[in-house]
Structure formats: C-alpha cells, structure tokens
Length: 296
Image 1 (spheres, one colour):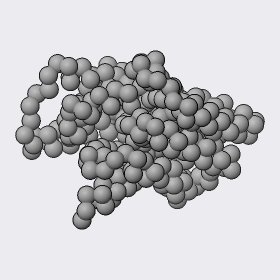
Image 2 (cartoon, rainbow, N blue to C red):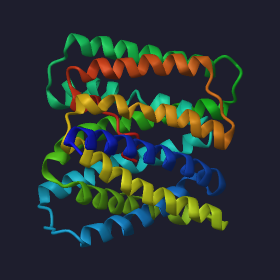
Image 3 (cartoon, rainbow, N blue to C red):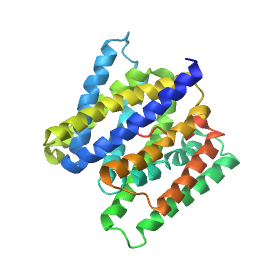
C-alpha cells in the first residue's frame, strides 16, 4: 500500500477510534462521574502505553523535552475533565461540534504567544468560527434547554481554549519526541495531576459494563494517539485535515444509535461554519488548524 493511502487509512481509523472512545466515556461518565471515568481511563492508558514503550528502543527524555510533556499534561488534565463533564450535559454531536473551535482559538493566540504574523485568511476564519459558535449557542439561549446544558456549553468552550494552547505546545513536542513516548508521558502526567483530587472526587465505577467501557476507552485512546501520529508522519496535514472533521459524522451516528440524540438544525449549521473556518485556516497554517479530536 502506498504511503499516502496508508496515511489516509490510519487517520480515518484514528478519528473513528477517538469518536468511539467519546461514546464509551460519555456512558461511563454518566454512570460513574467524569472524574472517576477519566482517572481510570488514564490509569489503564498509562499501563498500556507504558507496555508499548517497554517494547521499543528508548532513551530518557532530556529536561527540555520533559518540561514540554509536563506542560502539555497541565493543559490536558483540566481540558479532558471539562470535555467529558460536558458530555454528561449535552448531546455528543454538539460537544464535538463546539470543540472544533479550538484551532481557531489557537490561530488567535499564535501571534501573542509565538510572535507569528496574522494573515488575512486567518481573520476570516476566526469570524466564521465565532459565527458558527454563536449559531450553536443561539439554540441554547432560546429557552428550550436547561441551565445545566448552558454550563455544559461553557465547559466545552473552556476545554477548547485549553486545547488551543495544547496545540501550540504540541507543535514543539512533535519535533522532539516520538508518538509512543508522547502517549505514555501524556497519560502518566495527567494521571499524576488527577490523583490529588481523588479523596474528594473519586466515585465508584460500579458495574462490569462500566469497567469494560473505561478499559475499552483506554485502549482506543492509545491506539488512536499512535494511529494519528503515524498518519501525520506519512502525509501532509493539508491532505488529512478533512478526515479529522469526520468526527462530527461519527458523533451524530453514535449519539443517535446509543443515546437517541438527534442534532438540531442550529447545531448542523454552526458546525458547517466552524469546519469551513478551520479548513480556511488550514490553507495558511495546517499545523495549528489540525484537529485531533481529543488530545484528551
């Protein structure tokens, strides 16, 4: 199989795995709480990625690389908790759709944090993205939804802002660390940051089906991290970015089949604008405009 075709298959598989992981984590979060589901998912993902690292030639990362691993984990821990908590308040497709605003936020932050010049198409992308979010939120402020749903929408947007910062760190991290190393240290450091809150926030996972969902989510997380990293090592981001947005299609399918959730017209319209904004931004800065459904 040619490298380009393999990259496309790897990317499509990675996005599908992350989307299925979101479904499992939504169910586990509803049953056990977002913190508990996230803690045990990261515990199992640490063991799985650690086993993968043990089978590969490995050098201990230098201090400069380790600082990047720690910094990224400090962004991912609250980002992931907010994301999974929002899944207990909102339909799956709506959460995924709102999270797509992250690359646009990253573009807005890049000039401030990285000293990069703002391009005209980036301004247009930002305006399109904001319009898309406004359309989605307009449904939430119509009076048809609960206050919990509005808090859920706020949680997604804060999570997206943290993910945007994560994208900027990820650009540097990808240049100095391999995919399996990144997966292991991401999981172990996020776990370490979650651990101090366990006495107050840890609940019971409960049933065997909930444990199976968390374990499956951990395996899908590690598999997707490795598949996406391998895909982007084989093909340019501009070729793979459209596949990343298939996450919304998966969210619609799984949300409908598993949770009987049907996206509203405002959600569909808003997502179209947000995705268009990200694709416009990708023409100028594909590294930032890439969405990785959850570095969570």
